[in-house]
Length: 179
Image 1 (cartoon, helix red, strand yellow):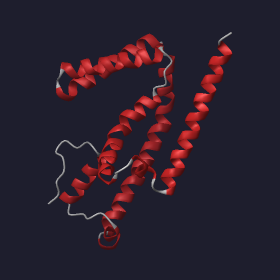
Image 2 (image 1 turned 135 degrees about the vertical axis):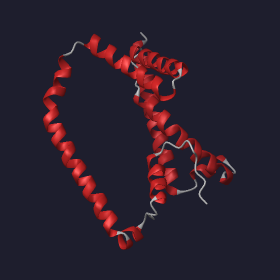
Image 3 (image 1 turned 90 degrees about the vertical axis):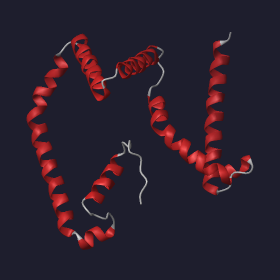
Image 4 (image 1 turned 90 degrees about the horizontal axis):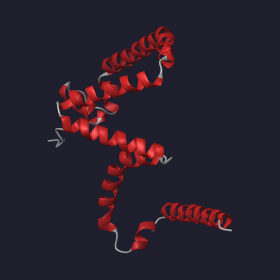
C-alpha cells in the first residue's frame, strides 16, 4: 500500500498515480510487456511537438506585437490577470494579499538592486535541502562528520576558498574607499 499526500503537486507523483490507475508499471518491464503503450506515448509526444511548432510558427508575429504595447498598460493587464488567477484557485482574498505581499517584496528587492535569483533558488530548493538535512542528522556525531568523504571535503575546501576570496575583495574595496 502506497502512502502519498493527497495534496501533492509534484508532476511525477501524479504521473505515477495515473499509471497505477491504468495498470501500467513504470520501469524496464514497460518496454518489454507494453510496447504498444510506449509507441502510442511517443507518437503522442511527436504529434504534440509538431502541433507546438506549427502554433509557434503561426503565432510568433502576433505575439511580437505585444512588445509594442506601452508598459503601463501591459503591466496593469498582467497584474489584473495575476490576481484573477490567484483568486480563482481557492476564492480566497488572503491568497491575493499574499500575492500582493510577495509582489511588494519583489519591488523592494528590485529597488535595492538585490539579486532575485538566490531568493528564488532558496525558496525552490530550501524544502529539499531541509529534508536532506534532517535525514542526515542521525549519522552526525561531531561537526567533522559532515566532511568525512573526499568529495564533501573537496567541496568544503572550495567553499572556504570562495568565501576567503570574497571577503578579501570586500576588505580591499573598503580600504580603497577609506581615505
